[in-house]
Image 1: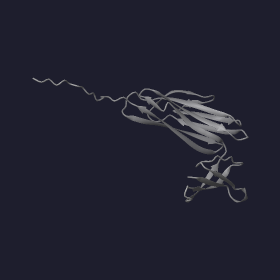
Image 2: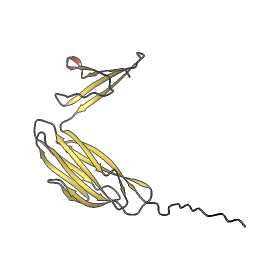
Image 3: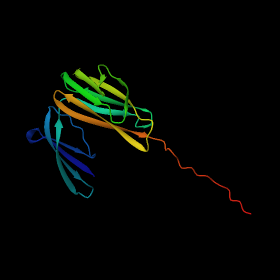
Image 4: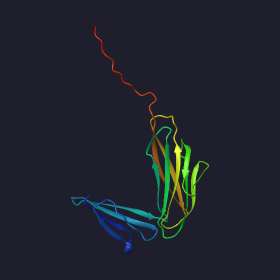
Length: 189
């Protein structure tokens, strides 16, 4: 594509952008739903139009990090939930990170984080510009076969607005009976 034209918002408050990349970054002044229209134009002048809606909610940024991305059977995977308050006011946050299926608890960390009933929880107030993290370490089974995904999902509740983030790591098990190739000499009489 040669050029992108963006319209974010509607009416007199609409903002127009032009870029050569298929993404733009926009700062919004308030929470709410904003209509977005993008027009893409190729080198021959052909144009395509797409529309959608961007939802800006209170809270800031959040993600679920996993390390390592792949582990051997019997190893440990750590899932770390991050929540950043980008609002100018303190907000109430709660997070819940259940133990993924097929693993056992290994450890947890994070100021104020509690592990009970097969789940990691954290709740409290987050000041403007502050980030909270809570980590859950899990041990994967020693025995298995193939390459198996272990997916965790954290649920965030920011003053009644609920959303989730997921992340997966993989367990790579050793073959029980690896194929072996032997070279045998040929003996002629």
